[in-house]
Image (cartoon, rainbow over all chains, first blue to last red; front, side):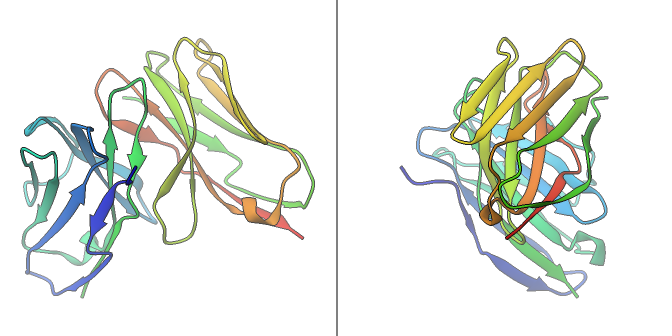
Length: 112
Length: 111
């Protein structure tokens, strides 16, 4: 059974640009969540999608957005990149709260 | 607002030692608690999931306990090995679908 796949693994972007990250969940999982990990703030919840609908949202500015497609694949977009957006972005999928979350390997975003 | 604290922040032990990592949370209304391992620059690997109705879970040399009423969980690692060196993260899931993470315990097992 394939795990959670995140692409790309690494990205380098310039301030002011926008970026799109992709996440393919485990087959059959309808919930996809996104987290940002930085040395200073640790792991912080961005948002969660379930059956193409945003079900939960963390405390991030509107520059951070996401969507989910009918096949449960999810994308996350960050517009007008800032240096502080440099982080490891992790995606997790779940088949329900009884089963916990499975994380992908992450996308390392560096903003220069 | 749920807050999760992990103690100690870092731990260095000789190979073969048994060790305990601690996790505490402020809101006992949780659905489950999950322990993860993270190697440098990598994603999270799930180690153990404890449902709110359970008291403990075991997998190999790992045993995790949950005391929901006191807001505490422990991860016990038996006979530690150098390959166990990593950061261990505790996360709780409340009524929403989000996980709230602790800051982690950075474990080093010396040969």
